[in-house]
Every structure is written in structure tokens, then in C-alpha cells.
Amino acid sequence: MKRREFLGKSAAVALPALISGYAVKALHQNSPLVQALMGGSTDTDHVLVIIQLSGGNDGLNMVIPISTYSLYNAARTNIAIPENRILPLNGYANTGLHPSMTGLQTMYNEAKLKVIQGVGYPQPNFSHFRATDIWMTASNSNQEVYTGWAGRYLNYEYPNFPTGYPNANAPDPVAIQIGSTATLTTQGPSVNMAMSITSATSFYQLINGTNDPVPATKAGKELSYVRNVAKQTQQYGSTITAAAARVTTQNPYPSNNSLADQLKIVARLIKGGLKTRVYMVSFGGFDTHSLQTTVADTTVGGHATLLGKVSDAIKAFQDDLIFLQIEERVVGLTYSEFGRRVKSNSSVGTDHGAAAPMFVFGKAVEGGVLGDNPIIQPVATVNDNVPMQYDFRSIYSTLLEKWFCLPKTTVQGLFPPTVNNQLQDLPLIKGNTCKTPAPPSTSGVNYITNSPNPFTDKTEIKFSTAGGHTLIQIIDTAGRLIINLLEKEYLTATNDTITFDASHLPTGIYYARFQNGTTQQVRPMLKVR
Image 1 (cartoon, helix red, strand yellow):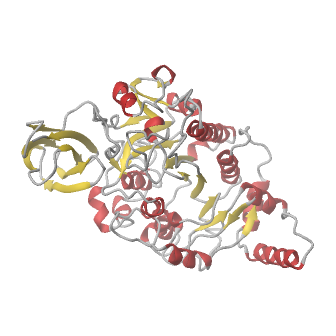
Image 2 (spheres, helix red, strand yellow):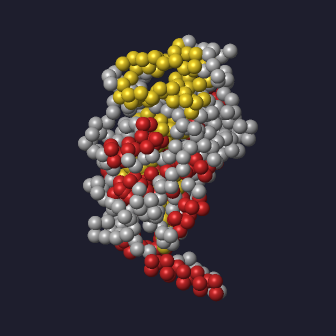
Image 3 (cartoon, one colour):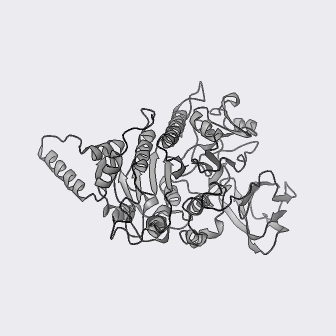
């Protein structure tokens, strides 16, 4: 979607009431996905909190591969975290966390954190704007979609929004975004479905009935008038104020942490009784091309500070949910528009990359690590990317089905048709949340191999399918999809073989990505002369 068109659509519903410095807007309308989240047709009190880490987070220095540490260290000698400083994870020796993330380490050890390795999509885009649009719309990289994935869900749940809203059955904002203007994630078919609160300061101004002081000039008088009109036209202002007033005590949050400030507001509004289903918050600064760490100590620096604030904010939020006795109702996720390259650059930083880890957290989350450590070549180049293991749309669709309890057919209708065959049911949410069992773990089983390896022109790929939709994709080291080598429906479980003819391709590393139901696996293959 072109940004001018998006802003044009959003401007019509921008309700600039301010709550502690955050601008609030009501999000709107009519695609199937938005309807799934908004109409309230699904009987659930579950809440999803989406945390956007803007800039492209370096996943390899956040979730660190211990089992292949020597390869990781060789690829980024000037920023690698010392092995003895990596935070261990209980019961999982292959992977650890950045040393600044003690809060999330504790949550992992309490089985309240899921680490999902290698999340991305075919044909990754390395533009901040375009990549962000892809994540927000859940589109393929070669198509433009004008509604957000959460907006389509909400439009399904709250059809025809904003016409007839608020009402007795849906008195509250269907989605709230804190920390920026309304984004494409919550864009519905005609309006944005979210109410946007631009900062924590604007939130407290809204609930306290105050504004920032205006200058004693004609312009100041005009600004004061505009603010008053905005406050009068904010349909949900009184509802939010009433919800906030019901909560007078919260658990402590860290200071000087804007993400913590935003999450504190989210917890307060959930406890205050809002029926809002989706909250979005954002935290920026992750575009770490240079000085990602300090030269003297790679465990500190700009990226370490960002990760520490993310970890501290999420842990404080989770502790507050426990304190407020609403922990069982809330699940959160983190995402960034892309990861960074495997090899660090000479400026003590990392450049735009492809796949990266995601976190899903909460009491209802099935904790642990999903996926294997990223494949790192013995001699990494500046063009090497972390290969995709999981399509990010599978995280969205799993949460819609397993957390918001939508039928699978409804979920599939909320995504572009070309995406549906790429969706997997992932073990993210505990099995009894919507009364459906979680998929079994498949870690440690070889589902795809190839021979010969290395090969010159052709190699035979052998795979084991459990039946049903089976997909094999060939991806290069830059993360680009070369071909869908196989996409087939198998009637029964079977072993099969397919030939990968790479005679027209240059020598180098290629990845065969296997997907079958809940199972995925990535196989590195080397073409030589």
C-alpha cells in the first residue's frame, strides 16, 4: 500500500484525543480478518499485545546459538557475545539469550516464553517501509494489500465498524495502539480499527482532563480550541478514562523505559475492564548499522541497552498482570520488520537481513524453543542471511485459531489466498486454551536429506511426509526463494524423492526448506564445480 493512500484512509478516522502524550485513534472496518477480531462474534476475553521492534533487530545477538558458537563467533568477531556471558535456558543447552535479557530468561525458565527461530517469508524485502508493510498486512512480498492482518480479523468480529459503534455489546475500542499514529496492522477495509494513543503523556492527560500548556499567542488559542474539539469528538475517551480510573495500584515498572510506560497503560486498561482485543505498542532504534556494541566489551552498547529495556519492560508487564490477576487473559508477541546479516560489518554493526527470532509470551504460551539454531557457514560472507524456518503468517494464523479461537476456515479467509498453503499450525499456545491439543514436537528427526552433497549439477532430495500438503522450497543464502520445488497433496504418509536441478545456478550454498503440516526443516546443500 502506498503510504499516501494509507494516510489518506487513516486521516478520516484519526481522533486526536491525547492520553499521556499518546495519540488515540479508533480503528475501522470491513475485511474478513478485521471482522474476525472486531465483531465480537467469537466468545472470548483473550487479549493480544503486539510489540513492534522498529528498525530491524539483530536476532543472532539476541538469541545466540551455543551449539554452533564457533561459527557464530567467526562470522562476527567484532560484535559476538562471549560464550561465558550468554544467559542459559533451563532444559535447552543449544541456545541462550543476550546477557542483558535476564527478565526474559526468567520468563523462559517459568515456561512463559516461546522462542521461535528463523521467522521470515520468501523473497525478503530489505526496505524498512516495504518490509514493515509486508509484516503488517501479511501479504506476499510481491503483492500490495491495503488492509492489515489484525484489521481484517477485527472487521470479522465487528462488522461495519465504525457504523453503529460503540454499542451495548461493543462499548470499547476494538483495538488500541500506543506509541505512534495508527499503523497498517489494524487498517480495515475502510477505516483503521484502532484507537491510537501517541504517547504515555497523552494517555495521562486524557484521563486527568489536562493538556500540555499552550503559548499565549493566537496560534496557542487555536491549538487549545483544536484540542477541545478533538476531545469532544473522541467517542471512546470517556470509556478509557473510566477504565483507567478503576485501577489505582500497579506493580512497579522500570523508569526511563518508553516500552515499559506503554505496557503499563495496556495492563491498566485491561484490568480496568476494557473489552479491547488487540493492543499495539512500539519501540525503535534497532537499525544498528554501526556501533552496535562497544569495542572494549561486546555485551554493552546500543543494542544491549535496547534488548535490556525490552526484556525489563516485558517482565514488568508480566509481573503486573499477575499482580492485577489478569495474567491468564493476555498473550504478547514481538516482531521486527527484518533481521540482520549473519556477518557483521567493519563499522561494528550489522546490515539489513532476512529471518530473525520472534518471542511469544504469556501464561497460556507453550514455552520452549521452536526450530533449530540458524545455519551459519564456516566462511560467512557479507551477503549471507539467516534462512527462513517459519513463515511469520503461521504465527499470526496460529494465534487467531488457538488464542482467539477462530475456526480454521475463518482464519484462512483472513489471509491472501496465495498465503494459505504456507500456513502451519504451530505449538505456541497450551492445548486446553481453545480445547484443541497442541501439535507434537518433531525436534531431532531428519525429514529431508539430499545426496550427493556437495553436488555439481543435480542432487536427489529425499523426504518423509506424514501426508497432506507438502512443500519443498529452495532458498539461496540471501534469503531469496529460488523455486517451489514441490507442492503436493499426499493421501498417506510416505517417503519420496525429488531431483533438484541446479545446473543453471551459480555455485554456492542453497537451502531446501521442507514443510508438512506442523513440521518444517531446513537442509543446507552445497553446489560445487
